[in-house]
Image (tube, rainbow over all chains, first blue to last red):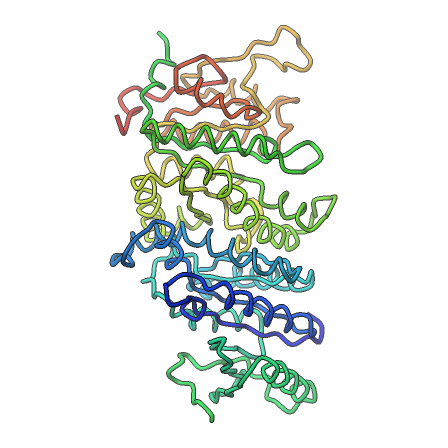
Length: 227
Length: 272
């Protein structure tokens, strides 16, 4: 991956929905722009996004989200295809190619799979492609936790050896960045400042001022919020 | 006895389509084929038959998307192209199936689906749930995380595993191979297609491994081993050409196309 800094961006589907519960085109467009811009500024960017179940339920015209595992899995199988299509459409506007990667959280128990996935990530990033990652719900054996993809973001950060996770993008200007080895989230206001903050982190980390520790807090609950 | 008669009553079928049936020889997508496939499968589903599609093509589509003229050899690059191409391939399927108001779902499997019992059950119950809701699942190998490129062997084997997983009545493998011949049809103009196979004998396997019958990725050998998996489970299996997906209508009306591997009768209908 050379000297490029690697950032994992965690997207909760709820931040992309409008009041009607559907994908809000403006928010989606903004997200694609911010992420592509981070990528253009010379960072390796990986996106972990939830949303398969919400979009699947919409496609299937369900009034409520399913309440049992198998229905959730079936809904996710329909919705993941919709979700990735949606990402493609908005990233196309910024001429950015994306890829779909589906993982199950137990991947960490299989070193060979971790290695392959890391190789795939590296190859994609070297080819200037942004991976959009989600849990492979239809075959997942663990309970599906709707919209809580922080554990997956943490796994992805570990596999990709990322320096930061952006844990929250509410697209109203507030972003939370967690640097590796650090339990303190930096609150950032606005896209320009997000970009600057990440740039300055990258510089200090390049000078060896940060620990280089790839560990991230186990859950969002462990993160201390600054400001 | 007309073995084809039984194919009229198949109610849960798995259709496997190879890259060669989805793209032109230059590697570019053949939208006519895909549109026709979407039409045929939607129509079959509407007639009350549950359908699962196993589709190859992700790497080729990914290469096209990135403007590459050659398929890469290196595994990591193939996996990267598959990650790009699978998303694109699903988009294309969605587009064409939407024209027939048919909802599709994407299910990506790895070999541990068969090896880890709990994962096996989850995949099975998800697939059955989808087909019961009249959704057509589109299945491919989850190339990105696969530990090597031939985990399943190829999608022929994957399709047989899926057919077993959902207890299908029939697996149809569409490719550039229109059937199994008694001699190599390219060297012998008198070659005749074998229309019905009741048992896969060593002689038959010998025939399949002969030169001239391995020109697609999987070749005839992997198709025979997929057929073996099916027969063991009492699932009928059929190999034919995918150049016109409407051939599926012929198959399901009992017409004598392709090579039919006939399952033992008592097992052959699971979902009458």
